[in-house]
Image (cartoon, rainbow, N blue to C red; front, side, top):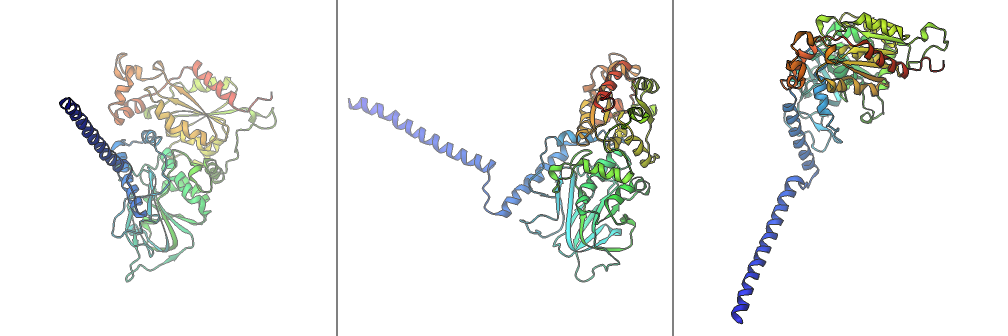
Length: 492
């Protein structure tokens, strides 16, 4: 009896020991998990450092993941736009990359900080002295040096290779540069290097970010433009004059020491071709930017409203075809037939081919006079910024599974512009690629196989070498759909 009782107790003691060991292992495991995923922060400085480390890691990952080759079109922007769909802007600014010594105050807003995945902005106030010839800003309130490239494609090394780096440094106590020009305005340093010259990048990378940053200053801002291009500035000078009461300065070639009370280096980016009202403290939006454009270029139509007289010829809706030369790719090969078909539907048809020599003001007025604009995917569609609200933009998407490209560059921005959006996707028998390749070639049968070869292969094949010939019957249905979206004739 005693022997039997002892035999039963031994396994029970072993079981209790095993259970205790299991509980101890669980506690240790939970402690490790908590330490990995929920670090305990004891000070505000530690909290900021933790966020900064995470930001730096995230930034390095994004730089490694985005490797988009550049070209003369707007299309590569859609690749990073797809990544930005996943990004939700930070509640707290993250410090940008900087150099120099000193902490600058860990609990305070840093001088240079990340305003989006695409942009860094530096802000400082006090005794500000700008020496443009050396791309240097001296500020008496700084205790460390900061460096930045003031162009809204911070992740794109190819673009940034054409952007000069600027330094913000503490004002030296002994040999400080002496002021030769004084201003009460805020100095705003930005670059027109990068991909400027392409309308999509002109607006997405420079003009709209400049508006986002300068608009709250109500004209009391002076643009100090680095990597200045006189031909580019002549194209958009009305916009800068609308945003500022002060002259625009070619700052790299400037011999002055310009002194201000405050400075901003680098604009703030929100989204492709748009302003995010939720990220703008005063609540301004893309509609405000478009109003500024109308004021700058003297555009008459805020909305696509026809003349009050139904017998007035101006009551006919006007349709603009954005033309391209076949040698550039993505040209309409039956453009004249398209125009005749649209005219048969009651449209007043115009054809325009914007290029680098086009008078921006004149072309803006043409676009603003139109109710429908149609074009193959490309930088020319950027002119939708001049369309009146309620107008329709029709994007013809080339063959090759490029709907994602069309969506990110022009489809999504159209909502902020209060413009209706329609899409016409080119089919296999509507592309000139079918004349260049055998019917069983991967270019025709498996476009995604070309996508997997990278941006260069995709761009060369489906954007540079392809022209289109839309079916007039299919296109007619799209034009009729556009007509129904317009207020013209609804009261007839």
